[in-house]
Image 1: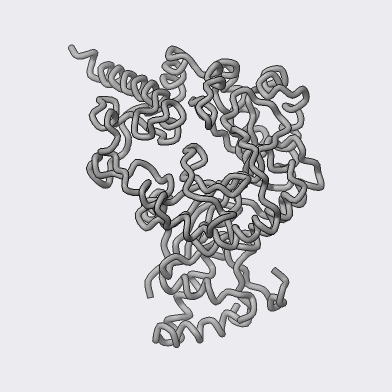
Image 2: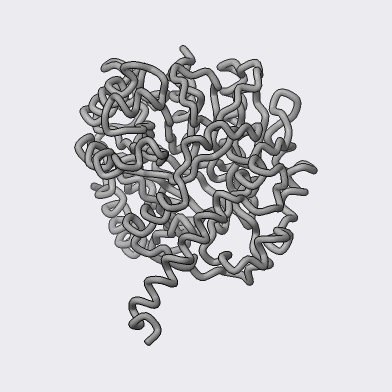
Amino acid sequence: MRETHNCSIDTLFTRAAKDNVPLSIEFELTYRCNLHCSHCYVVDRGEEELSFSEIAGILDQLAAANCLFLTLTGGEVFIREDFLDIARYARSQGFALKIFTNGNLINKDIACEMARLKPLQVGISLYGADAATHDRLTGVHGSFHRSINALRLFKEQGIMTTVKCLLMKENLAQLGEIRTLAGEMGAIFQFDPVVTPRNDGNRAPLQHELTEAELYGFFSHEVADPGKSGERAYPLSESIICGAGRDICSISPGGEVYACVALPMSLGNLRQSSFEKIWHGAEATKLRRFRFSDLHQCVSCHDVNYCIRCWGLATVESGDHLGPAYSNCRIARIRHRISDERSKSKTGGGL
Amino acid sequence: MMNKYLMRSDATAYRIIDGVALVVGATEGKLLTLNDVGTFIWKQADGKQTFSEIIDKLCQHFDVDYSRAMQDAVVFVKELESKGLLVLSDHPLKTGER
């Protein structure tokens, strides 16, 4: 008899992408939110939200399709009065559950209920180290203290939390303090330096994005190795673009299936068709034919090995899903520059 | 240990894909893939069978002798028990309990 063995998550997702197993799905349960963040990418398309019974039926289908990681997100999920029922049903179907919330509606009773669900992780957005910064960005007075309170309540219940912070002009100087605060709350700290346009292409959130100089400073100080991406399993031109529509996808509050939460490319609607039919349907199949060689500018870009191109970002920025994502180009250029500078300093500046 | 009931912890999530069990523990968040023997034991760990009964089935399924099967199964169960993924209980899981 052979031994049991571990498998890296990267290996697993690579295999799932190859076999088109939707291993990880983000389910946006509502676009309603109690905060008014001007940097938010979500666009409320006015869809009629799925009912509990519709959602339960969809979760059955996702479980049958071998989805393992299910993220319940919004909007703000706790605005739905049936959210805990949905989460309980999801756990009963064997999903590893992640829940994204701003924490503003969490009280002790809800935190206790959440602990019983044994979620893999609860992600809470935090945009500042103090109320003045966070509340200015969320547009709601008191939101900072409510989010911190939620983190405290989750910690008391032994729930694993992640503080998710979008880095913006307004909070960049507080990065260290936010990280410390997350540590005090027992949370993992995750930050993202890329502010994206809204899903309909509206560029209003970009008023918050970091300047090139700020990004340079950030990557110089915060990122130990801004260098080349890891070894690729295939020649770049033959590589798939990303896992969107292969091992990941997202579902909107009205049942629209998207290749990814960031890629507003519909594969079909679950009110009209089953998940299996959509996942193996014409739109999904078409999407999976694309290879890196189809990215007309990226394939010959000299920053390509420093780039983590987002398919969705390229689409919402320019409408050209095979074109470059300019926000990613900017970061790749900076990473390349820092990497070159570090190499030169190691070799004595080329002397 | 042999007369205890073996069950999957309620703090786990899993799927069986192509005959391979992928198991995630909520406490560690770490992903495990199990081989064919591990997957067999995992599927049988429904809280209604004792560890000994599961080993009997393991012997039949893989055509191995009891002592060899037990040796490997004990190592496997102890490892997953220490990770909080499997539970050995004195009492069987009641229908509808989970």
